[in-house]
Length: 144
Image 1 (cartoon, rainbow, N blue to C red):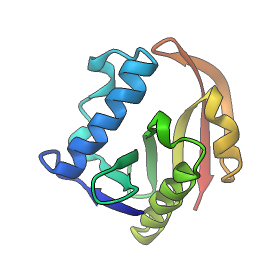
Image 2 (image 1 turned 90 degrees about the vertical axis):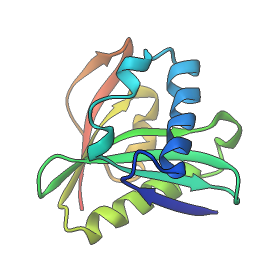
Image 3 (image 1 turned 120 degrees about the vertical axis):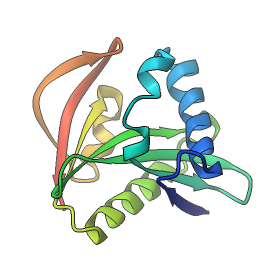
């Protein structure tokens, strides 16, 4: 297993991230393409977890909000790789990267179905639940 990181939206790593997101968010969850691929792509740091040289299995992106905070977005694990703790490894790598870059906090908008996953990694909920693209979400954050 390896995790590669890129900011280059023309790279193979980024294209692998988009393929994973397309399968999970657009095909599985029905998120519109224009909401999934957005204006923040070029400003984000994209992480892709590979199970071996060819198999991109999971992805997440970090969007810097300011010099202190990042927003964790687009966390996705392909269906055939779920239950193997790949999301844990990917989240830990993203958090390590954020700390190394001097960020103090990560925020995210978790799908309610993923809230337990993030709570297990010490993220705290705040605010009220809300809907985005027809899916229930909750705001969460973690101080690094």
